[in-house]
Length: 180
Image (cartoon, rainbow, N blue to C red; front, top):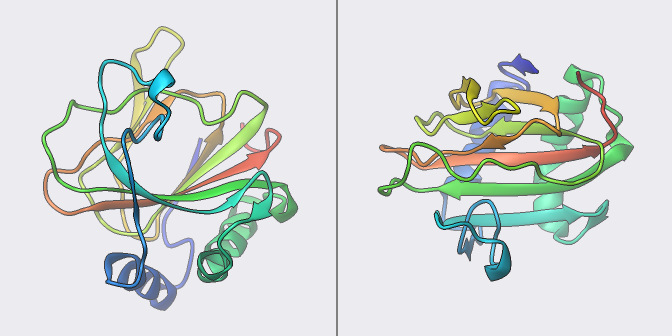
């Protein structure tokens, strides 16, 4: 796992935070932050959230959001030496302060070898948790505007719901293990 603060210049960090916290971002309601709207995959605990997906299976599905997000992708790939062309998915997630368990459902994003990167758009107290094979918490990262954490996608992880301000994260997945 690697963590880097200020992945992008502050002016770009501010622009992205303003856009996604403002009235022009079209957030979609999701029944559960881990399993989306798939009723067959939900655990007993459901934590609703909001999402905006701009790229799936390497194909751009929302050109406007992808264009806004491209600087994050380029800066992140540069900082962590990740192959830009291996991007598999780009999805924003937003949790708003609500009563919730300590963390959401532990999961991996894909069942193929991949690298996961989380880019935090704003400061928040909704930590990201990382789990060992036995299900114990082995690490946690507090969202800080401009921070990115990159890790082997086979590590189970979980978001958590903030108690104060919204938590906005861009989740990027890349084909192959590029970070150990």
